[in-house]
Image (cartoon, rainbow, N blue to C red; front, side, top):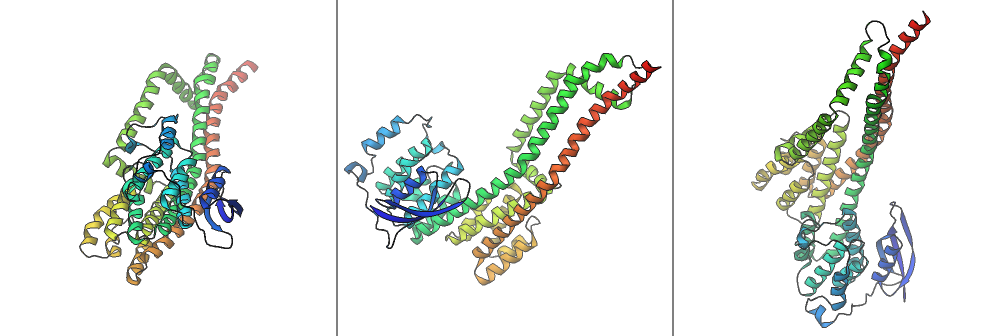
Length: 432
């Protein structure tokens, strides 16, 4: 048994350090995973890591899975797709796998040993099957990039391209660490945006539910009472009664209409033009438009920076960024720029004609091209916009909460006032 120093990340994002004993670095990574920790660095205390070579049987050496591996795959209870190329796993599982693989390779473990260890401890049965299949293929002589390329719904273009560049440069550990860092940064931004959108969605849903209950359940109970009112009812009361009668009389039609509109919206989003105009609307919508724009620019900058720093050629990187941009407006701008860049134009000069890219990004790209530090400057831009996103989310959260409370007060209060206006008249008429 050897003693290892480790750095790990907990599920809540906090960092932890300590020491642990184990047969090798992979055993320490596996032990940390069982405790709910994701290893980010494992080094032997006082010496370089000397990993133990995995023991493989003859079948494993020829690329065929061992009988134990085959039995494990057969015994899985998960619904494994018959065509593994169509299999999908959670982005969180892929991110954890990448970070742990980077840690093991950085510690000096052979790639097949690392993948076998991660397969044994994988939380996702689908990912476990994929990893065991890849293990057999890699031991049969297939390159890692060729193995992961068979599963496009799990390993995206940027993943495959960076691993391929790592194989060409012999810097697999370095580039895997870059890839893991990229995925973690993207996940943090995604989680921040998701958190910012959760409260408005829930609050809006609550407003609709409360208003619906008042309109469909409470208002009808007062209708007969309103018939006692002499003269015309107040205009707000007439509106509320009219809406209530319509919704109660056409509840099926109303629900079908809502479902049809939602279905039409989803179908439209799946079209090229629909996705483009929806993303354009997101960038221009009041309040949230600036946030969506900053998120898109941060993702574009970080993706391009990560690809260039790993050695992917600029044109190949732009093609990947186009597919991985997450915004159809930026994807179209990048697509239109590729031809000019391939013709010899500078990236900054081409982007300058695209209104979707801010002036600061264009200026930094220009400086990066002149100094040969485009990847590092793009990373700084991505970090800058990530900070802006965090600040924007904090500002929106503090602004949206009172705004939604006000909307709730206006909607619910308006309905209540419309109900109580006639009741005041009834009370006054009884007093006379």
